[in-house]
Image 1 (cartoon, rainbow, N blue to C red):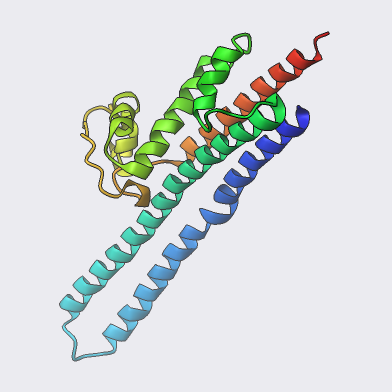
Image 2 (spheres, helix red, strand yellow):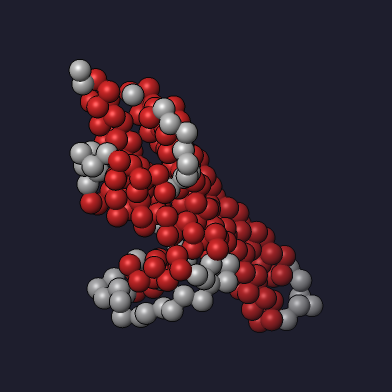
Length: 226
């Protein structure tokens, strides 16, 4: 059992580590590249006396805003897609565990096995917080992939903070429910309308690892009984 626990937890850790230490740190550098480019364009404009300086300044500000907004969207898209990847990795791990650890071919696959295991192994106490966060992941993943629908409605009902952008969360820190969004999702997977943060990914990482440590320890005890 330890082999599978180490295997699943390592897969989860590697996925999150790449995001945190390799991918996200590239964005400040990309933003600096945009500012450097703007600086060069400003120098060129200053040396060209035929240009209307006010019009050029306005154009550069608009260009800077569009480039920075695009980078922000790509960064948010990366976080959103990582939430999907993390949950689907978990679903595949569930199926792998069902077949190779429990030793039974799954009649159903993926996330539904969580509910089946809780019924099948009631003495294994997962803990309410971990169970709720895995449910949160499921609704978040479905919302990001499919947009409006039952999962989006449930996500909005239970976890409405996902529908507020980082700027709103900061502005409404003292009262996060002061502005209430009704989900009208257009392109949630590409950083619009639904906003996953790195802190969410790390929460999910810890919950998934706690899930595997709890269940695989429980399975080990069950099989070791005389």
